[in-house]
Length: 160
Image 1: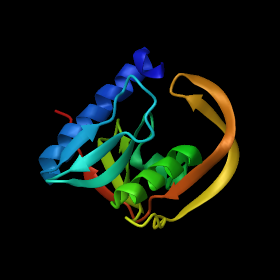
Image 2: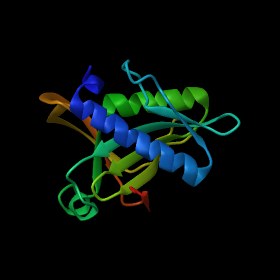
Image 3: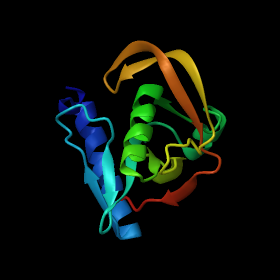
Image 4: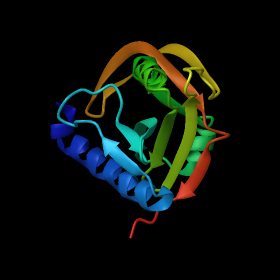
């Protein structure tokens, strides 16, 4: 599994940094799905009950300025992964959030992808493209969602 490789372990460590930041910032519990298995979502957010479903991605070697210019402020996520999160959040009657962590910049961006009824509320477009298959490389031709993050909330995460 990719999570067992050095790049996978780095991404997991960075996701856990986001988890700690998220919990201390919002006083909510970020509960991971099993990392040793291929789960459809990365986490659920809990207060006294489940309040959201989450997809979290860490991006490397990309500053906020690079993200805005080189990537047109669009976050690429496979449509299969996004669609799974939308379905699960609808089934649980909670919203589905995307969390993007630009690691070197220390910037966390959050956006509501879909509401509790499964309606997509984030501006996104779908396109079939060839992209990196996994964190460890390779290539895959698949349908990807490009989420426009212009309306996302941005936070500076303390990396000390």
